[in-house]
Length: 119
Image (cartoon, rainbow, N blue to C red; front, side):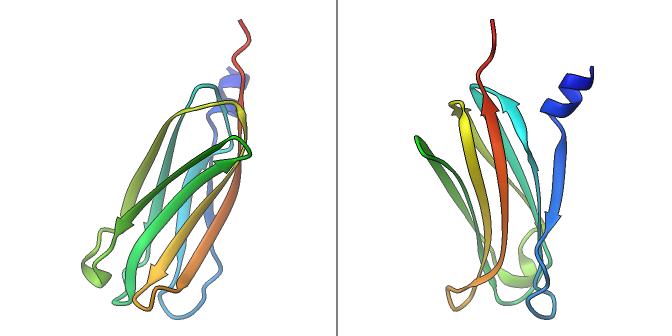
């Protein structure tokens, strides 16, 4: 039971505030078994300048990315990103909040370890 709690534990991170109303929180596992099914949930404070959230999961041998367009204050606060069949390895997950000028407004970076399943 302790191992499953470790393998599927979630970590919530928030980026430091870059200005009024600019923050991004991310829920993602830190460890999982291969082939991994990564689910990343983002929560963003509504702001007229918010235009997109980009999430990437990258290892030396694998790269996955997804982007959701945001409509400023009218955008949903929560978005879910899924990446299936991740091979074993160490991944860096980046969640980026993009503003109306195309610039990064907030960034959360997290490590993920996808470990081979022992048979």
